[in-house]
Length: 116
Image 1 (cartoon, rainbow, N blue to C red):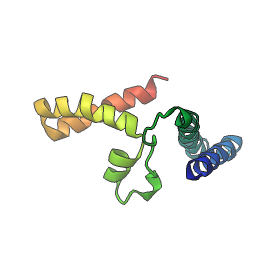
Image 2: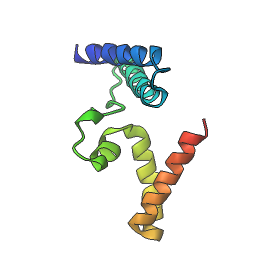
Image 3: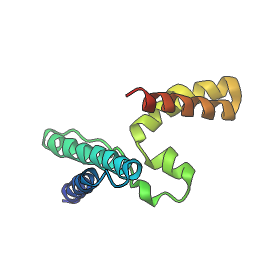
């Protein structure tokens, strides 16, 4: 029940943000994308549930983050965060230190955001 409600809420927020995005394109556009992604994630989880497929949510209530590190590192887009941490940050940090790993991770993230 909670997943159904959360999915409906995310799609409702995405629809409202998308319909009003012309007012504040950056903020409402970001809200539209984040809510839409979480809504589709919930929809996929609802359809997969009867077949026994289970996985964690794409995002872990990012608004509950108590710091920027918790927001970006643990709550926001956990799939991409895991990929960047294991495939970019850790290898770069072994060679360049944690600052170099962080810069590499943010650089790859910037390229992934810029490309589309």
